[in-house]
Length: 275
Length: 282
Image (cartoon, helix red, strand yellow):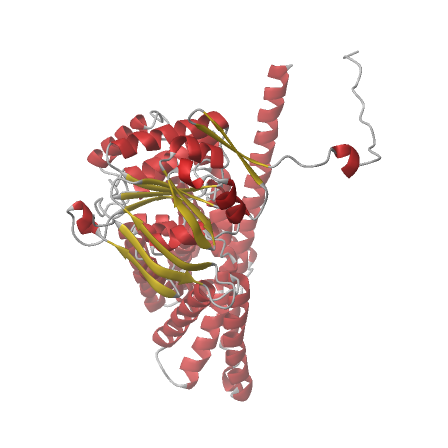
């Protein structure tokens, strides 16, 4: 099968410790994959190489639109990490989603009636109906994540890339976003996310890529989440618990308690009930 | 004669007022993008760079607008590229490039002392010297800048909000940056005669941050900032006529007063809203 994304012996950075080294990877149309690894493993750099905002020092990144029957470069929808967004910037939800149409809408500095309709539909689809006029700061973490997902989806991308979509939102919202992505994948969308939440990845994604400067392993979660591979990826002591079909990944319990770490703690005080 | 119309019998006042209103609006409009990009210092730096360019074009006997404009545009591009391609931060890049350019101007002036006087106007602005031709240049630049911003509105908005993501979505960010450097250089040159090198930075920044205090909407910010610039241009001209103070300084002082007033009002309103909320909770 023709892959949609192809990384061919890609290295980024120079010297003895490049950020990424000798990465080869195929991403096929319809795949739903997670990039996992510790902070500093090069996850964001990896994504930026695919997005084209960084160029490899060695090797080649190829995107094949004809894998989908299209021509030219495939359209990519990108959802950046929430913490990289300038939340004080004066834009409304509608304007952020409108940015997704930047290559397609007319020359006027406002969305036309058909664009407005499309923005409304996309927001509705993601459960954000009626929030068009809100400032982006005045939303919950889950809503913020979905606004940026709406900006990516409105342009009908061939490939959806999300950097840490479950970071900075509460557990229920993270669950909600992953189910939304699973639905999109079910409709045929190719999706690549990065995450450091191994348990969420194991429970939602059929393909895992373990990264720490190099690709340590890739495969289905049940094959990849082994103590050996995770220890190598995280350079630590990991514990994998399997029960029925479920996987639980955890850092090994610490061999000490707080009594040993803080031998002489200052005690706190519980104030007496209100006078 | 009516006190409001009296100054208009003088041609210098008519020309100066039209120019000041246009320059105020122009700086207010461009200032929004500058403030939101966190490049407030660039107006200050680039106007100094352009001063260097103006001196060079005087010595070389080039056309002032062409020579100084090209110089400013190249300095803006150089700053942009330095920031994008190296680890040097934007304030440091502006500091190095524009101050060196200003120093080149100062060096040339001290070498050829005969024109020291006329450059007072370039430094502090001289509205008395605004000719009909200057007004036409300011009007032309204002139209051009407004046109560019109108037709690249989406691309500029996206690039200002997040340049890297804009690039992923197909915006040609390098091209947008170049275009913006061009209109910024043009606006600074057009404003130099009115406000002077040393005061342009304030006219770029103050209306935009005043507008930011008043709204969370990008469109409204553009509108408020442009109108604030135009209004303070007019008010500054009147006041400077009656109190006989330099027009550039008067415009900037009025803007600063308006900003302080807005800051006081918005923080008072916020505190009042909080108090209201607190009493509700209790």
